[in-house]
Image: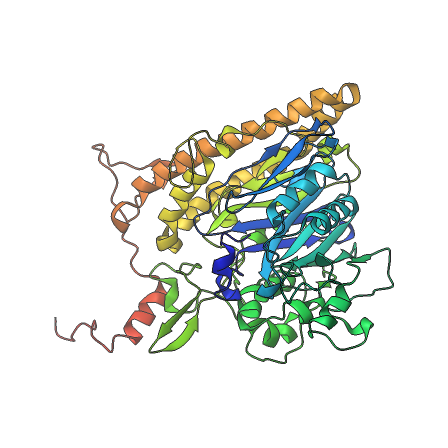
Length: 555
């Protein structure tokens, strides 16, 4: 995701290329046979909820207007499809899910005359495709016919049986030197991720060379390699062609801010990632790149996927808990922008998967052995995944919870009926006092998540029983369940917020037991605890103040 205009893009790739993260697991890499795919949609100032496009049938002359996902600009229209499918969030009724991360690439390749932006392309695919392969065909054919007006994009495209990664770029504006008469309208390549592997992308092009003869697992644009030759960006043999090297070679920021997030995900499931630290850190220019995917050393669970979406490089060389940037209360977040200068020397902050600018985060669970109305779930959080619970929304849902689609709420209008605003109210209390306050939030978050996991089989067994008699009743039941859980989450989060205002007032901690504040025998609030500095912070403070705060020996 990128909340920038084309003009802003010219300022340089790093300015927009650290926006989102997608994690992917094939069906044979997971504990229960699900395909998992996740998305953290990260952009400062972004306000969004859970979108919905109802299924429909359409006349031959019906128009589909293309409204830019980032800017709301009207790009024009294309003919509507005869039939469109129900879409809730980033999953459709057939358990197809599409996510993205923006990598930018060569700015001269942006086609300013194209009609279709990356966000519209995702939702067009979800409305028109029953499988991941169909979604790729929809996306590439539309981009080729009507033009693609966004920067370079990596897409996650999954269904219950297959997981794919696709990268796409335009070929310049017609009439310029970057769009020759022989040039295709777009360049793209899509690779099927092996079923027993995990993959990820995070705002840096990741596809290098690929097996151009593997028609079953590889698809790519006709004329792409010749286009790269014509532009002078590739001179080798066809089988040596690398999409990444030709169109979006990673600089330092592409590796440290972006590929490091992929490294962190892989590191949870491999003991061999240390050798890729020189690459992920960006400190060694010619370091060996990471593989596009790896086979995990254990089966991946839904809980693993959610935990990885909450990752801050804990326990790695990129850990955010080892410098004063963490503040007094050991915050694993950093103020922005990512780079800053001191005495004309540029420095940087780490950029983990979990980040405060997330507008929403999800994990999609896609299961081939269940009826499609039951098999697909988007586990949705309307904030940074670390600071919110992931509530279950089934792919057959045709109604949104009010908290994820709140009338009157927007990016500058607060509403206590809206999950984005309530979750952000709480998380923004916690960020600057993280080690003191986060355990309270985490306890509530985890209790909600665990209740959803515990209920899942019970709910789905009931849905299966209903489905065997009347699929529509199962859909209605699951839709109501998703709405109920989301709205309950909102109410619990409001309680959490008010509780934390009282508990942590004036930077102290009021004692409680079983969720109730303690009182003295006379009815006053019990004595508060003044926690003081965390030990690591206290030591750092003393080390950096040259004895200024040391008390003298005399009393």
